[in-house]
Image 1 (tube, rainbow, N blue to C red):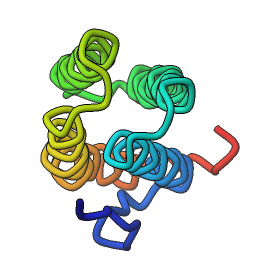
Image 2: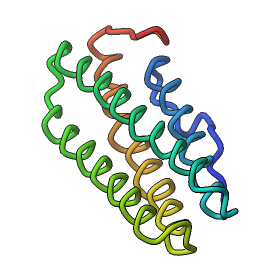
Image 3: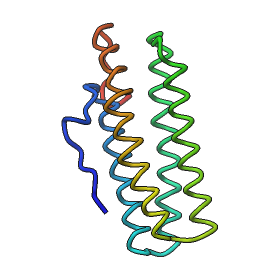
Image 4: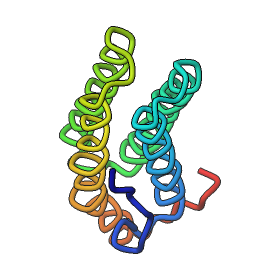
Length: 142
């Protein structure tokens, strides 16, 4: 299963968001690896739980700054976030029902590569450009 490595092509140019994206990518990779290698259910459940919690934190952070900066695409961006959280929840349900299957590993990989990477490169980058145009900076502390 291919692993996603952080690179500048994934940078949105905003330290806070880039740092959170690095954590999300690392944890999604950890989860995919745990499922692929049939690690114990406890480890997979723990990793998935962290990933779901951290996704909520990250999306809330982005949306809070979008609201504060009057970002015009906030509603569309929020809808994308809800789609991702729903897909993540479905993966959790699939794991609870079927365990660590090859299909689940492939679904995680698809979610990571197709959704998250594309979202960062296409949607989050637009927010980064907006922040720069408005002269707004967000440090890694939030």
